[in-house]
Length: 194
Image (cartoon, rainbow, N blue to C red; front, top):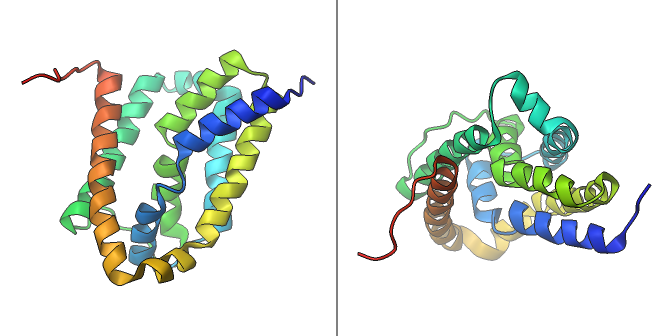
């Protein structure tokens, strides 16, 4: 066992930034409003399970299906793009089941355990010992659970108007993230000058 506090802290900070659960609050609230409920424990466990799977056997698992990380990231970017469109346009593309179970798919994957966090885990494996990454990931999942658990408090603080504004704003952000993820994994570049 190679426990190293510096590695744990570095991996924790990187994963915290990539998972960005605090920035995902408006998206989580939007999904919750469509499904009527949210299962914080189940959603966190599914996301944690997906990330553990990829931490230990990610690349070989995708290889079984003939899929590389870039293709996986592109698939995740398409789902994020459609979720962003829903938020901005006020349309319904995903048929989410009520009762909280429907919220697991768009929140656990690709929002929490998305292409960004999965590729980050694979990258961290090249630099740090698995035990340190595992501890950092577990700590992040505790934070994810707490944020999911406290969504009603965020709803009360923001109110209906605040939620509506945040939903539109973060919908545009989500669209931009999806496009960036898509472009970076397809090799498409857009020049910055006009």
